[in-house]
Each structure stands twice: as structure tokens, then as C-alpha cells.
Amino acid sequence: MSLTLTVYHHNGVCLIVEAGIVEVLGRRVKLTRTQFVIFHLLMSQPETVLTRNQIMDWLEEKQKVECLLMFRSIDTQIRRLRKRLFPRNPKLGKLFIGTVVKRGYRLNDLRQKRQS
Image 1: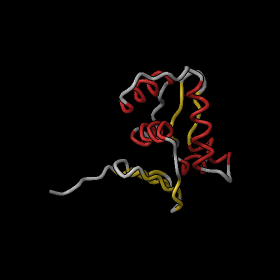
Image 2: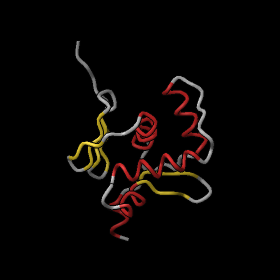
Image 3: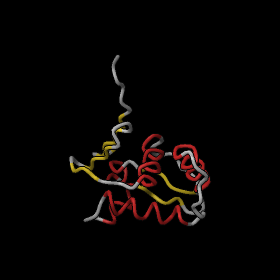
Image 4: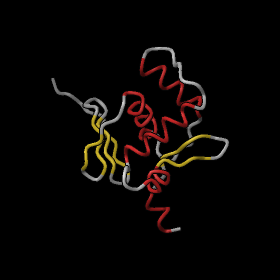
């Protein structure tokens, strides 16, 4: 019996879901459970705009408990996630996890941002 791991790569960031591992350019990053679940959703659908409601539904499904987060606390979780991923470069964190005004959040392709 072999173990299959779900691995996502995006712009130098690696997520190994079953192992709970996140690496940014080879540097291991520790995330809270909530941050990890949100990041898993973003990494599984890069460049797709995800609404706060979709993120809250995903949290409820993955954490198997009712999501007691308030609507705007998703914003706080995203802000903290950006800071954990890119502690020395907050601008890069905002580029990587982009805010789509009045819609939600999306994982951006940084290579396209640099070319623009």
C-alpha cells in the first residue's frame, strides 16, 4: 500500500497537504490550523477569486465544526497568512494573495505581475 500525497506548487511556494507542510522558497513556514485550511483552498484554485463565504464554507467542511468566524475575520486570517508566508516582505504577501475588491481573494501568478 502506498501513500499518495497532495502537493501544490505555486511561485516558489509548496504545500504538502497530508503532511501539513508549507515551504516558501525552501523555508518551512508554520501556520495555524485555520491559516493552513485557507491556504489549502487558495493553493488548490490558483488565480480563482474566492469569496469570504466560500472560504468560510471550506473552513466548516475541513475543520468539521461550525465556522464561528465572523465575515470580516476572514480578512484578518488572510492578513496574518500573508505575514506568515512573507514576514520580510509584506508587499510580496499582498501580491501573492491578492484582494479583489468587493469580491474576495485570489492566489496570483507573480510572474505575470512582474511583466506588467
